[in-house]
Length: 189
Image 1 (cartoon, one colour):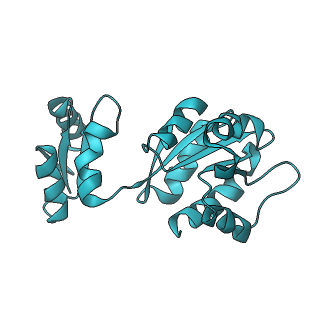
Image 2: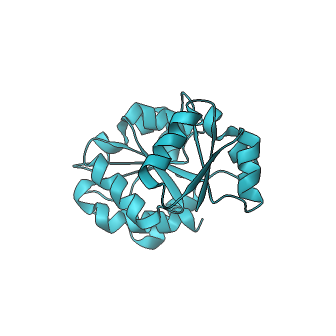
Image 3: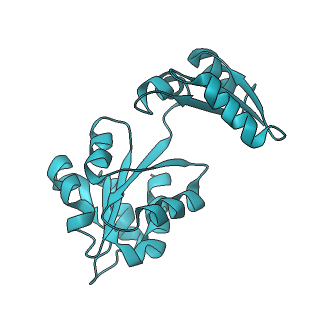
């Protein structure tokens, strides 16, 4: 496996870290952003890693422009962020990137184009999960896919995604039931 390191910051230290963790399994090369991205396009490298102060523009700007954006899911909400992020990664690690953020950071990431979707959990699936997202993105972009009284079906979730919803709230104990359905809808959109 070959990893190219681009981005705007700390290329040397990132390359050394990757080599120290997996030297027997990977080859690491440091390149400019454009060279790293072209190496991926031409099949000369398998993965691109980049860093900048925001984790987006300087790290992924050229790569996103040439390779197309990956789906990015920001996990906010008030409960179980770590376990929800791990669940998403276990189901779709090769198709999405997952970031754990505060509610306001996750919502702003959507607004600034640094994330594609927001998911959050709380005890009701609405207030703590979607309060800030609803306030900043508007109710037309947000939906509770589970509440203590009801869990949406796969078709209902598909319909909400088709309507342009980008922020999804649910009851924390429903995560294992609704997250797979949500990822199915988002990835097959």
